Amino acid sequence: MISTQTPSKSYVKRLDVFYTLGEGVIISADVQSRTRRDVTHYSRIVLDPLSLKVVKATCSCEAGSFGKKCWHLKTLEQMIKEELRERIEKARQEMMQIEEDIASWG
Image 1: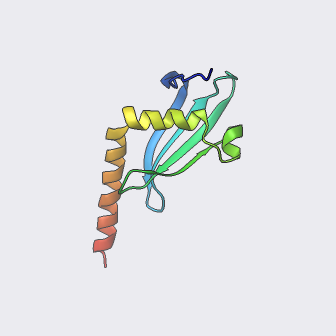
Image 2: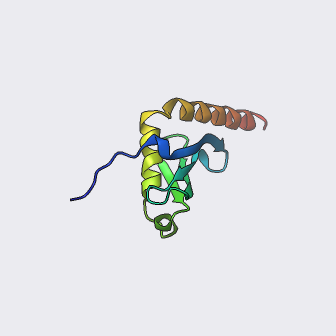
Image 3: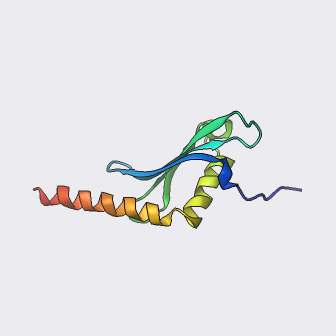
């Protein structure tokens, strides 16, 4: 039987939502390992600023080093859907305003 546990937000130790003009909106977090309590993995998701779809997802865990979607990334994706929309939209709006300002320079 496969477990369908919902990732717990208590595993997320640090969470940042910001943007870079070259990539898009970035959600990065330190997510504690489920099996090794003393290990924390750095997980990062990049969203396209227009569609807010995942463009790139990376994690420092063993599965992430092979390009697999790990539990840590699934935890972040769940948080994006449930509680980070407002913070993501704020970062997106700031980025779009800066791009508009740059475009108006010349």
